[in-house]
Image (cartoon, rainbow, N blue to C red; front, side, top):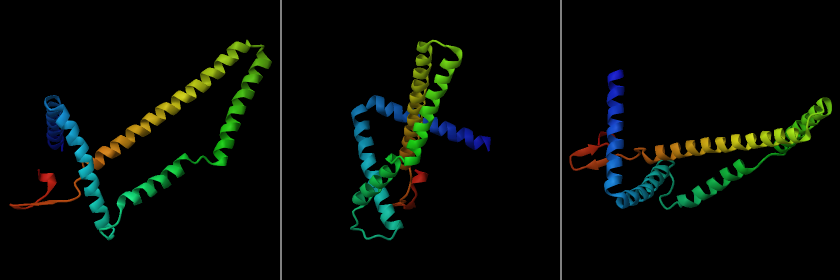
Length: 165
């Protein structure tokens, strides 16, 4: 359905333009609004989480989130012994191969040192790029969470869903 896609793209561009105009006209209020929006969405998600899991309303979701975050962080930060061994073996293999190159070709030691430095520098650049990709994905997930419509609102005219607004 290309007509619907065009209309969706037009509506998205219109929303971005309106948000940009709001930010340019009211920069301080827009920042305050965005900070409040994060708090409101947190409470909305908290209510949805408690309701969906049939938990007591007095549950401290922030404590649960802190424990969960710590658990996930510990799993992400932990590097297994096998990974350390692979890293060490890989570095030793590169160093050994460069030594073989020097021995067999009588290459300049400075050239070998420069190529090793280039190898390690390129590996660091690759890790920085991967980190930026992961950060971008996390930002995308956060933005999607911020725009989720979990709770429908009831207005004076009857039931009104946020998607219709």
